[in-house]
Length: 469
Image (cartoon, rainbow, N blue to C red; front, side):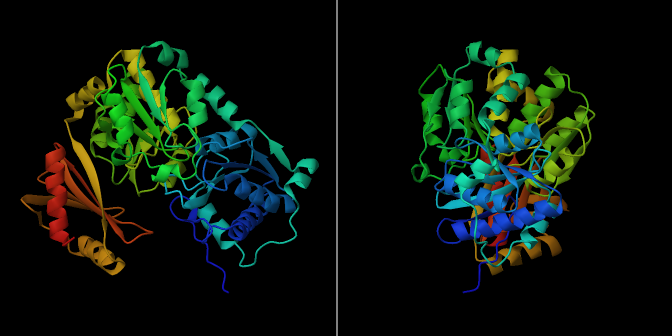
């Protein structure tokens, strides 16, 4: 039987456990990684796993392949978040990080992410180089995990403690804990649970236990997946802030004191405002992916800061952060990063920064958002993921690029931009519709920005009618 061709997507390799994600295929991916490391003089790798099924097994499997090549694996005594792996690479001076995770995907998936020595996603060229070295044959005659431990080719490090110590250096955790701000934290059964229970023991903790099925809910921190957290906040007047993380705790979901979801567009604006106006960070760039609100560009301009719009995928932001001074970088799907930390998405770090912002100013999240609106105007954003067959998907994408709409429902198209998909500006700059294909599924992502929720819905519906979906 011909072996499966293993392809890395926008954020690593992901596949269904026991279908394509098998011990043998993990051995093959690890072999490609080991060969790439040896070509580049690498000898030490941090390997971490989250709370998914088989994490420890797949970590040991990876370490056994590395050990055969004389590469030392640095592992944690239990599950850890993706940012803990990335920070661990930097703090130990390792050459690479490997995370056994499928991030926010459903429980049936696991995956394999690569992290660079700079503490963020490996650059696309390195990922492609590893992918090209993955053999068809499964590596055999591997040493046992116990043998590697005896030889010193497996070292145990407490990466969670390293991370928590780093948090205490970056934040006034005591101020947050003593501020009187009531915080509810939803781990979504993911790898952020242990650290957050230690950092904020007085918080209300939801789903902070290991459940590899995630109780049947994909651990993606978006509004519709977090209704329980929203209700808990609504029903408890002492709660002012809700923080949720995905399965490997690199993404964030946020709620205000009314239990209303605060999306990444608003969080990015808050992060920029806090750092520029309150922390006095006046230098650096703002990096945003194509689907993020243009209000972020507007605020950067007000502050006299340079900005750049990238393709969608955090790896493009990380690549820039590794080389240039970036105040804030982020994407619409909850992956956000700030200066003073590693060039990595980190849901715990971002949640603590918002909590610290509230604690230092004594203002509610709603009040802080009102301050943003006073600067750039109020707005709302949303996205529909529309299932269409692949042929139709690419037909719509081609039409949007080659023969763009002149109108969308009652709106005039005043400008069109193509970076990663197509963005149609409607009646000026404040309203837009964007369409982009999923690279891995028969799905079209349709995004919109408008003045409020009702207008966004109207734009999305008009755009879908125009596309016939």
